[in-house]
Image (tube, rainbow, N blue to C red):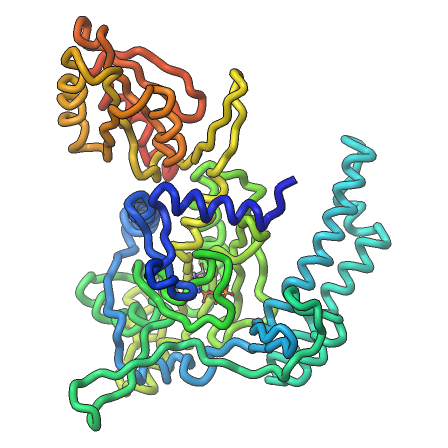
Amino acid sequence: MATNEDNLKKIISHAKEYGYVFQSSEIYDGLSAVYDYGQMGSELKKNIKDYWWKAMVNMHENIVGIDSAIFMHPTIWKASGHVDAFNDPLIDNKDSKKRYRADVLIEEHIEKIRLKIEKDVAKGIERFGAAFDEQQFRTTNPNVLRNQVKIDEINARFKECMNSEDLAGVKTLIEDLEIACPLSGSKNWTDVKQFNLMFSTEIGSVADTANTIYLRPETAQGIFVNYLNVQKTGRMKIPFGIAQIGKAFRNEIVARQFIFRMREFEQMEMQFFVRPGEEMKWYEYWKEQRLKWHTALGIDKKHYRFHDHVKLAHYANAACDIEFDFPMGFKELEGIHSRTDFDLKQHEKFSGKKLHYFDPELNESYVPYVVETSVGLDRTFLAILSSSYKEETLEDGSERVVLKLPAILAPIKVAIMPLTRKDGLPEKAREILDNLKYNFNCQYDEKDSPGKRYRRQDAIGTPFCITIDHQTLEDNTVTIRDRDTMLQQRINSTEITALLNEKLDVRKLLG
Ligand code: ATP
């Protein structure tokens, strides 16, 4: 059976072979944890962004989008707490010299215990079938309970250490749990240290007047410092949201696992401004909405789960992640945070400007509370790519690799193929393509046999292939082949646009 690692390797090599993702600076042996998106990848990324923007901005009258700069006044990062507290606890293994995030080592240990519970549950289901009462088993089985207690104890200890900044305690926890370096198997660890994740550079051309500035580690602060500009110029009334898609930079300690953890990545964030005291209602609302956005894509719901934060960030009064079952297991895909009025109050304090909102309904002025939804574009890309990748054996015994991407996200929507390169078929095919290309991203393909062309389109995830044959010249009909069912249908070429519009209608996902 293929291991998770094998699966990830396959996806990485498929992504490279078909122009989805390349290692950055590859001819110079690459740059660690930085990736480039190729001709297919950039289209998929753009389509994910459009799908998010549509759902968040276009579908909500009270949400608008902005595009703020990556460089910002350095005091912003002082106010937000990033200069002092945007740290990850790092630990080195003395034998392998490998660096790890202490919190991730502990989380992975917990995940192993959790998998034991799941294994026991799976055994029960296998043994007792429909008669198995999973709920009862989870709450009464001694093995399950023992493991759950272990998990709770580890979480509680870790939380206490982090809250009291007891880094020695984190090291003791790692030692007590007998966590070994996955590479060397050794338990010979250094002390735990805090490491700031922000990249800095200098602004200004004259060295002695240059100021240190940071590459933003999140897009959210660009929204906070513009919130009154948008509120006033857009005449926004609370509750309202501001959305943004953009690059963020973090000097990650452990940067493995392909585009899951990069040093330069993109976020799609929305900050929702609400009345103080109403934040928990909106927090629940956005949890539900965001999960719906993911599952509407048609990926198996089993791949998603919520994970409540054990240690809340300094700005939050409630926080959870939507986790996705990536090839390397369940990991964070999106964060949903109730950020209170922390950020705006801090910016008031550090800038000396009033950031109050006057609520005409309450006839009162206050600093709004904020609920944030923050999803990684690259992680969404990886979630979609990895769950779409399928190796199939066909009825005739041949094999195909197919990317069953949600059709609305597929880079190429339709491939146009003349059956042969003669008899006027290419001309007819181009005529059809010239008509479709205004509305759909098309690819013209006349090389090799039809079978090979289908395999090529399957591998890049093109949902529809249109073949132009001799009959087309007689009665203007074409065949349209569906990527997933591989069934072909003969339709009049005048019906193609309507059929594609129907199949690619985003209303089906967001309606
Ligand atoms: P993690 O615990 O995995 O480091 P985080 O909790 O620090 O993530 P947030 O600060 O909540 O992440 O950022 C919001 C989203 O941005 C994450 O859910 C993730 O999808 C994305 N993200 C964060 N860091 C990275 C990264 N280094 N590479 C790619 N995406 C990232």
